[in-house]
Length: 398
Image (cartoon, rainbow, N blue to C red; front, side, top):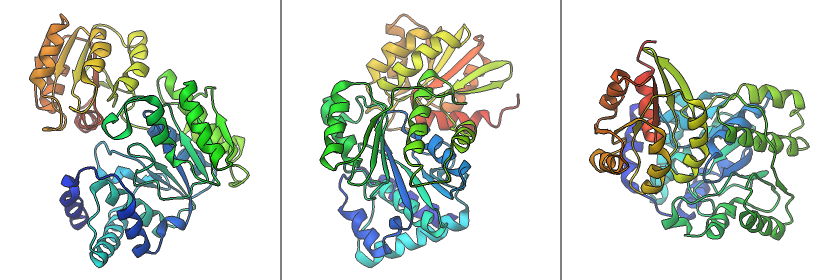
């Protein structure tokens, strides 16, 4: 798939350009592929990926040919497009990119990287004859490239502070941006427990006369962490509410789908060379707040943290919550130049009275952790770092 990857690499530096005019124009040129199947759209600050994965697994177990679009990928770019339970094959990706490039050339529009990824999902799911697609929002909701569908369900996981430079500096403004995925004719579900956030979302649903459900329960799931039980409950309730539209969904298929859910890099546990290794893409204070109690209660001591984070995140707040849980920290740089330098992070660790080592290269940071005296290794702070850890430890023998 060299042609497809070369085109996507070309778009990598396109940055963030909010707005839906480009993707709508390209979809018109492509013949509206996103209308060939039903769509479910999932927004939120954290938990949207695992909620999407659980919901897609339920739909698969119910006998529906299902497309799942998520971001970012951890190891292989093809992870972003999952069809029928497997990531997209090279031939279908090449064909989808070829259609996208032809449309872009025809009308003289160069999409952003994320717009291209989303368009490939719409094209590929149509070519693969999917019956339903689960679409994870990239950022926000209202102006996100995924928000060009008329969904049968709009699902919103917990809302917190992230991407405030684009979404606003209050929970109300952020909730309004996330709530932009609510459209007429959708069933609306949220697992938010903040009254103000719920009020913002409810008003949007009422504007369109949409059914609105606040999901407060928990559901058993193979994904680790108590917060994942809330995500699973949201996916399950969504499936239950959609059963009238998707009649193959049954209590039995829901249970099978939840049990079969896999979502790598989220409190993923491995054993390598006598070490207990945990990998999680916790990348903002909202995610850390969910993961920290699990670390404190579950991970054996002594613990070493391999940490790297993007410069646009709330670094000090994440550090204050995460670093004290560990006996030592190895800092690294998962995505230079966008990540905070390992040296700056190491100094933050030392200011908190903890020993620190700065190792900019993630693989060498992992090697140091494996050779360390601590029995438990936790890798966190960025999904890019989680991806690098999976790629590294998958090649290390047990």
